Every structure is written in structure tokens, then in C-alpha cells.
Image (cartoon, rainbow, N blue to C red; front, side, top):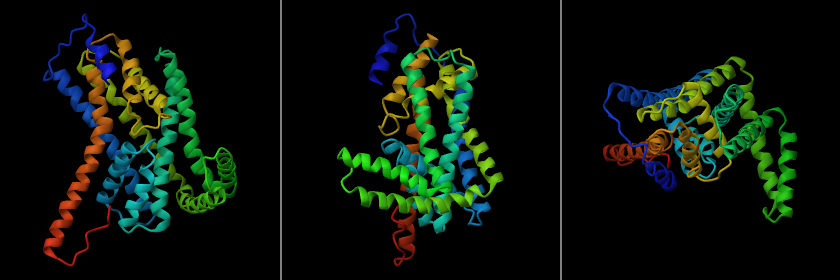
Amino acid sequence: MFFSARADFSKKDLGLSFDLFSPRNLLSITCAVGCVALALFAEICKYLKMMRQLGERVSPRAAFETVVLGRYYDCITPSGAGGQPFQIYHLHSHGYTGGTRSAMPLASFITTQYAFVLLALVLFILNNDTADVVGIRIAAYVGLLAYSAVPTMVALTAISPALSGRIVGFFVRIGAKLRLVKDPEKTIGKVEGALQRYSGSLRIIAADRPLLLTLFALSLVYQISICSIPFFTVRIFGGDLGYLQSLTMCLYVYASVTIVPTPGNAGAAEGSFYLLFDQLDTSGVFWAMLIWRFLCYYLFILMGLGIYGYRGIERRLKKKKDPGTPNGDGG
């Protein structure tokens, strides 16, 4: 962020001059915030749809908290590894059964990943001259493979848990030879047990084709909404770019940083954004990047903290009314 700011502020010929409260900018800010709201709405609808189709209790609050806290843990854990495990735990703490509490986060994760891959492939082909930074283009193509590999491995557990277990076992033994895994047999046993549980959970969702298509369509809405934010933030500072151009550039940013193992791809995301959108040769790219990063990253952290704060207050009030009330689910 420091180097992006220094590069942007050093452009003497591109003085930053804008009216934040002009009708155009107010509309752009409203649309950027609306993109976040639409993305959240699409994700919440996915969980409500799965709860209804799987015969579980339909709870808008549980769906909202599961989505937001999943994004919260994605943002604060390396490589976004904490989101789905916590969502499974959170649904368990709200009384959802063993099969569905695992199936819902995994189905949401798989459809979201595949929606990104499909959207990126289509726009990369249609707008193949959008990203002029060769390093980002190469990193984006590698990132797409990573985006595809993880959900494919998870989906493979529903089709053939034994085969996926052998594949994982092969890599675990390689890790043992490289002294990265201390007890390979114990690790393989744990993985095979998890794969069996995931297999049963995912079969619940895979058996319902209309549900899968609905989840995929909502995942496309989520990805398009999140990747539309830069179009509006750059326009606030006078950036003149087409919508599809901006959408493609944002997809390049996300695809290129997916292999960076920092929480929320911190550092790489900001740098990639600046390098790509700086091609517009306009002032304020750094500030546009900050607003984009706040809306698609820091905002989810603040919302997650807000949920924990609200739940803490809620538990205290319940405890005052009934001293025998337990402290909650421990989340």
C-alpha cells in the first residue's frame, strides 16, 4: 500500500481533484455499497434455499451469520482456510444435523469457486488484451488452476472418496519423505475419515440438480457483484473505463493473488489492483483501491466483529434475566 501510494502521489501532472458529493460520485458510492449488499444477499439466499430444500429449520439469522462469519474467517486466516470449517461449526452450534451442516458450506464453496472460474475464463477470452502486466496475467492463469483444483478435490470426495483418499495419501507420503509430515499413516487416517464424512454430506446436495443450478446462479451473482465494485470506485476519481473492462481487470486481480498465502491475500491484492488500474492514467487510483479494499475485505472483518459484539451483549442480557442461562455456544 505504501509503494502504491508513493507511486500515485508522485504523479505531479495528475492532480487529485474531485467533488465527493457530486451526483455522479454519490451514485457511484451508492452502487459500490449496493454491490456488497447484493453479494451478501445472494450468499444468504443460497443458505436459505439449502435449508428449505434439505428439510432443515429455515433461519435468516443463522444464514446471515454463517455467510458473514465465514467471510470473516476467510479474511483473517492464511489462504482463507478458516471459512468453511467455522461455518460447519457455526451451523452445528445452531442445531443443524451432521450431514447438512457440512453439506451447505461445502456446496456453497464449490459453486462459488466454479462460478469464479467460469466467469474468469469467459472474460479472459473475450477481453484478452485487458491486462498488459505480463506477470499478473501469468499469475492469474496459475491462480485459475488453483481455483479449480480445490473444489474439484472436494467434489471428488462425493464421487469417489476412496480414489480421492488415495490421491491425498500419495501427496501425504511425499510430504513425509520431505519431512513435512511427521506421522503419515495417522494423517492419512484422519483425511480418509474426513473424506467419508464429506462424501455423505455432498451427496445430499448433488442429488438435487435444480438446487445445484440455483446455487450456481446465485454464486455467479455473488462473483459479478464483488468484481463490479472497482468499476464504481475508479469512477469516483474520474476513471473512464468500460464495465466489462473493469470486471475483467478485477477478475485478473483476484485470480493472480489466490496463491498468495497471506490472510485476505494482503499486499498482493493491493499491489495487483494498482498495477492494473494504473493503466487508466488517471488520478486517485490509490484511493479507489483503498475504497475497493475496504468494501470487499475490511468491511467483512468489521461485520464479523460486530456480530461477535452483538452476541456478547445478547448473552449478557440473557444472563441478567436468567442467571442459570449458559454463556452461549462458545463461538
